[in-house]
Length: 211
Image (tube, rainbow, N blue to C red; front, side):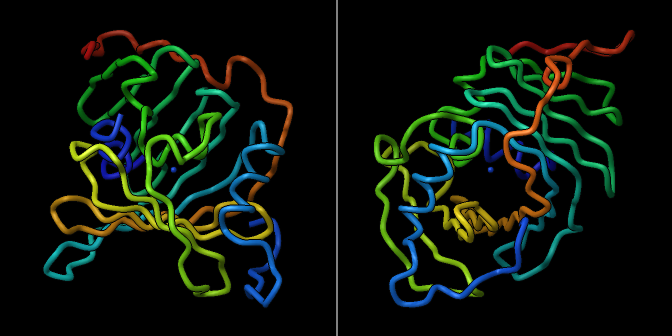
């Protein structure tokens, strides 16, 4: 997981087919979200993430792989341009930074909570924590916008684009005016994942910081 996406989780407690146009009568983003939560209990895939500052400067993009199993078990591994991994066993979330030789550990509810990550890794509805509205179709995706009800969420809004009942893009505007875009692709829904996929043991000599 990139440092920006890590922040998105921490401070707030995110395809198989070609993109389709949102033609008249096509499922809304809300309907696709409901179908995603109902039918996809776990998945693997790839991500690419980039952040643009308020001055319009683009930071170095990150890419890697993700997996999850509802509720609350996930693995988000950055592979380039540096290595970082975040793993949750459903109770604890471990963020491992090899460059810092440090692991940060926190409760899963604190790490996910009302963040956009709860859409992927949680099991509930957005309505309890967000004001959700529809947006016009864009880039062949059906969109919704979720604004946190909690003023201390750490971000202003998150836009989520869906296709084929799967989230394909997440665009988050934080309280500093930065925009983070996460592209999700290569979805493999409901695979058979071993328990070890979501287990983590800190390497020897690494500092463990409990939050």
